[in-house]
Image 1 (cartoon, rainbow, N blue to C red):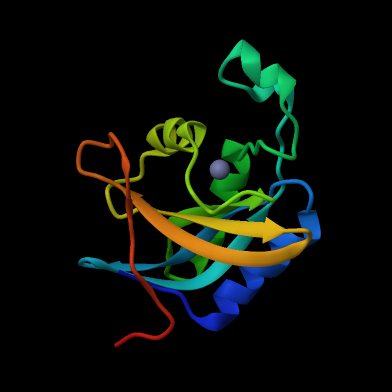
Image 2: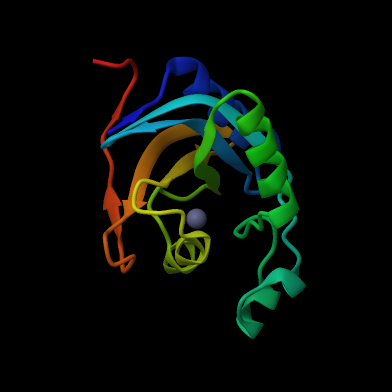
Length: 157
Ligand SMILES: [Zn+2]
């Protein structure tokens, strides 16, 4: 279960709208307490995608509109910001401009690269015609072989 307060949902939605029609990317900061992840802040990162950042030659045909790249240096910055507040990087988010908030095969490959343990959360924000739509949350299963849908709640129970 992922606790996502409205201010966090709003921050992700705004970031996704601002970068539309390009994808946005960022990290979420918070605490992991057993099976519960509490998100307390977001760290908006630049989408540093270039065709050279791709995993396969076919990636060269893609653009910021359907690809994102999170630079490890930005990840470190987020980690530092989290530590200063006694938090951890507990997940990441990116947007799907004019596509459903369903992970793509490439998202799975990327997630397997980030790893982060089975509680690391992957949020996807759909944006339709510039307006934020649905937000979904996922974690990797124990084998890291596939995404499983995560329940999100607005407030801690
Ligand atoms: Zn994606």
